[in-house]
Length: 629
Ligand code: SF4
Image: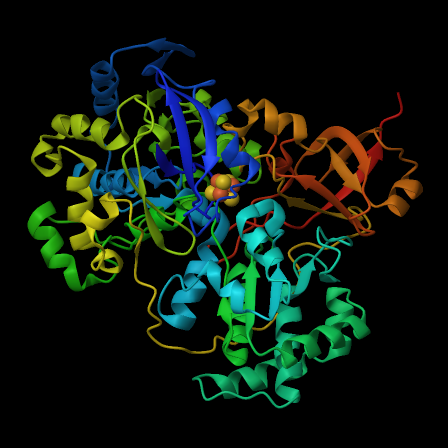
């Protein structure tokens, strides 16, 4: 049976062979123009993870110990514990791991039963919210990506992403375009593809770099009639090559070459990832990148993290934004739903850490592992009543007061919206627990609101969703249910430059913390790894877990490959192995972000972009000590 993958924002279609409610094999789908029939190893090993280590029963924690209970008992318990809370005291997250239909009902339930607008998209907030905001600011629409633009691109600037690891099927498309010149800007001194023109950049200096490129292109004669150009021209005028080279740590000759490559390009595109967006100036970075795109009349090819993170945000998963998008359809919505809360609402960072709510409904998300400064998150949530809806156990599930099993994506029917805003059908591959919308339909009875949740199937939900979510108004549900991809709104509404100044690095090396630690992804693990860690194929192939050092730095520190080290930031220290890597530049230490064995996010203080609230996960000052045994 064909359905979607469960992992990344490429959103490949996969063919699942099923016997006795078990997946025995996963294959690519030749007609899938996303994967072109060749999905990545994560997708192809889903048969190893679908039934391992699952949450199977509702549980209530009593005196620190989980007890299995009936679903009705768990829901009644949650109701009794939370019924007197005010809308400001509860929080819900939408999730990129569940269908559009489940996300839509989740936020509808939060708005109707708890009257709250404290609803936020988990992966969206932590990864690419700055991209969504930046696109809205510059183009008036949150997503203009089309992966197939890469076929006609002659010069692709990749900044802050390693698509071979992050989005393998998109990487295949890059490699297939043999005429494509790739400029790869990231902190590493070795690229996966030796043909790339590789530019190492100091983590956190991206706005300076991009402003500098725009300045050089204008100097070479590029101009624009788009609104804001004169302010942009003035703002970038101080970003000369000397300043950029010194700030970003780039060789001037390399910089000149890359500017020429971009200037000479006829069909320029950009692709960016979380090394651009997970900084304290993430929105500035995105604006600066999009300024370059506008100036070059280029294309944006950037994707998103989880398979349905786009949908999780589109359908009312951003605080203060109704599922209708703007307020023009609010009256129609309220005719059906009753009055909805107009408060701005708290985002994940506010609701879980800065001013913790009294009850947090967490769905398929692990804030304990995913947020920076784990100790602070644990302390903040100490007095919060946590309800966890999920399919795999996580640290947050273990800390929760109530755990409710829900269907995984493979056990759901509905749709996802991939990183291109392409809406794809999700078919129910396996029988499993109730879907989240079915659980919330039952729970709505406690609030005497079941009239608002009379759906019989997920198709009923998408019919309602399509009417209320402006960006989805034009889709055909019948075609989607016949497995024909649909597209949410991608029409550019306007164009304007958003000039930005570079305000400085997130964190820089100092006498006390002489190295910068940065994080990145493996192609053999997905985000917080609670699913991929169950796959023998992936765990067998994955890289060694530890801190990766430049060879000269290792020599100076007296480190050999495999030595034990302590890496300490201003808030925490971790003991792990030291490994020597030929891709890490001097002064930088690298670590994979996924693994329970090395909770690297716990070294990052909770510093975030003031606009998007996306935390910095890409640059923190650390000191290293060798452990002498
Ligand atoms: S590229 Fe992404 S969507 Fe495609 S198979 Fe791999 S993990 Fe799944």
